[in-house]
Length: 327
Ligand code: NDP
Picture 1 (cartoon, helix red, strand yellow):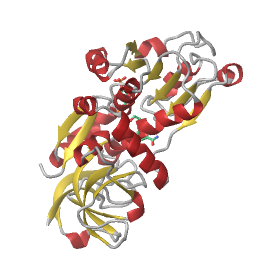
Picture 2 (cartoon, protein in one colour; picture 1 turned 90 degrees about the vertical axis):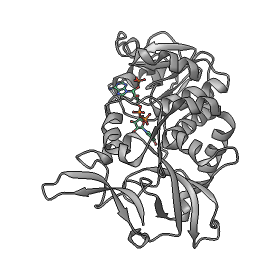
Picture 3 (cartoon, helix red, strand yellow; picture 1 turned 180 degrees about the vertical axis):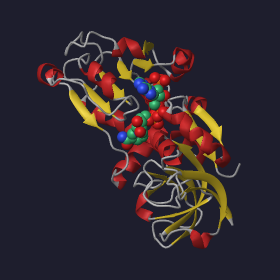
Picture 4 (tube, protein in one colour; picture 1 turned 30 degrees about the vertical axis):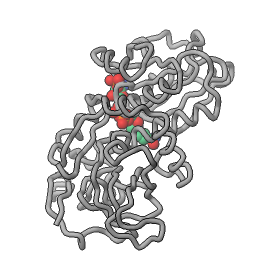
């Protein structure tokens, strides 16, 4: 028997999340059975744990869009018992049972071998948010980061924290945008060289172009923030659009694209091909300082999840929530 956080739909249509005991024969079919050691809480998980069920496709459901652990049994020649693995994406935790479980059974194609230099706890301190931050930085590099500070929005959140630490470690000046002034010390410790108040971006003139300021941007916020910062990018600079914590609308004009050659790069972590996932995890092991990663960790257990889910939706979490499945 093992423990999992199970979300069920009641007769009134509302959902309820609670820790339950399960047996291996209840797990879905799959090539690889993993003893899950760590998972995390991402924005999508907040939606799936919450009362509306968010992105959940079928009930009962085990949320958790990422996990790291040790292979227990495998029908696939790529993995054998004892291998350390990490999983992000592929709609695990939404359409398929995810990481809030001491055991998971998944397709071998969805897994990546844990890169040298990371243990399972560190891999989940990175998790989907950090993996996405790395993809966002790689996309900026592919298009060329211009001189000038690189802007990171939603900086105290998961994606923003990891993006700040990676960019700083790569030698870039990082301007961290936050709505929480009390996180300034934390963001500086991650390597931010400048703290920008959320309102400084949101409450600019709303002209389509303003002073050319930022050499690149990782944007976890979207909405009004993304619309405003597009007009502040240096000529030819790129914005990696990662998230919509501040809204899905985009009240922008085409002017920054036409007159400043700004690139808007969409980042999707879910359907990344195997080779890209391996490349990104190897870059994480190489370019993300582990002491800074440690400073981001908020430890949690399975039974904390019903409370932590709503917190992340309110933008109240700082850094990365790491769920220890054996605590
Ligand atoms: P977090 O909740 O950890 O961080 C989001 C941060 O955004 C908050 O900490 C806050 O930072 C800021 N924020 C929250 N609400 C608002 C608001 N109304 N206006 C402006 N800023 C706000 O989430 P993650 O970092 O894990 O994820 C960020 C976004 O990226 C989410 O939308 C998520 O769904 C998306 N995402 C996308 C992925 C992809 O594949 N494209 C993968 C992973 C995540 P602060 O207090 O510092 O301002």
